[in-house]
Amino acid sequence: NPRTPMDALIASMDQEKSFASALEHGWDGLSLDEGDADVAEETDSPEEELLAEDKTESEDKADVIAMESMEPVVDQEEEDGDDDFQPIEARWYFLQIRTMMEDTVRIALENMVQNVPSLRRKLLDVLMPVKKLRKYNKAGRQIDRSDKVFPGYLLLNAALDEELYNALKGITHVQGFVADPNMEKKKKDPWRRPEPLSRAEVRRIFQAMEEDALAEPLQDLSFKEGDLVLVTSGPFEGSEGKVVRVDKAQTKVTVSVVIFGKKSEVELGFSQVIAPKFL
Image (cartoon, rainbow, N blue to C red; front, side):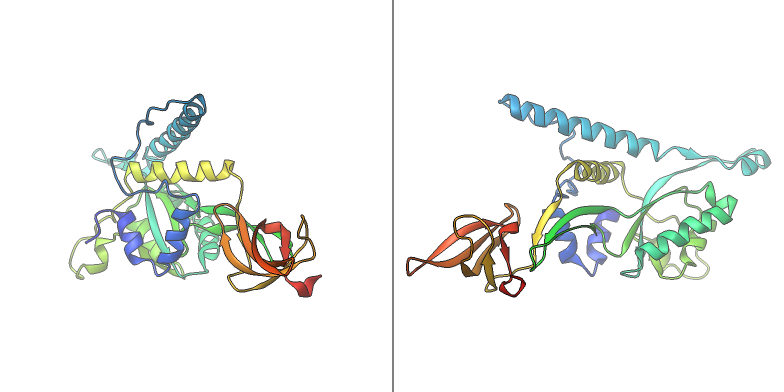
């Protein structure tokens, strides 16, 4: 059985490659190791010290968000009517959604809490984490967009009780909570609250979101190995060649071109190549 909701998320995702890609492209802070960097490693150079300070500041902000989002939620009507009333702590949960319907469900949740006051006090936030992406198509045009980090999932900050749980489960395209013990319970068994994300997991997610918001967009290229391209700028402008490698990390593409009658490999930026038909 998965150890945490994050483990369960990875185990249950149909798009494991998408999740692995998210971790590779700027979301590697979502390590599942509980003993990860609460304290920045010692650095030698001033540049490394500045980077460590920036990282620590980002972690501190993420810690504040994680703590503030776990404050107890008090329903005044319930509190006034029951001397033994205990407020439910708001926690973060993963809600599984039918793929491609994340925005539809997010809007439905926002409408639901606006129309039902008792749920408004319990469902505090709905997030769909994204990462920035800049793609160059085969015509050489730059396209900026945002890609979902967890396709098929939403993050909920909620004081989750059985009323809210049933309301959420009743929304079209909602498939259920990650790490939900009620999925295996029998009819007579009592309702149990799904396992929330740990404070450390919440901190890592918000830290990654904040770092991504400050970072330059990740870059991608529509070409793949073997595609024919035309060089549009630089010393090899006007040359045609075939793509040999695409290095997304360095935003470089290696192209095999003919120079003085011999094949040579040249390294170019993503914006320096287009498909010949777009010339």
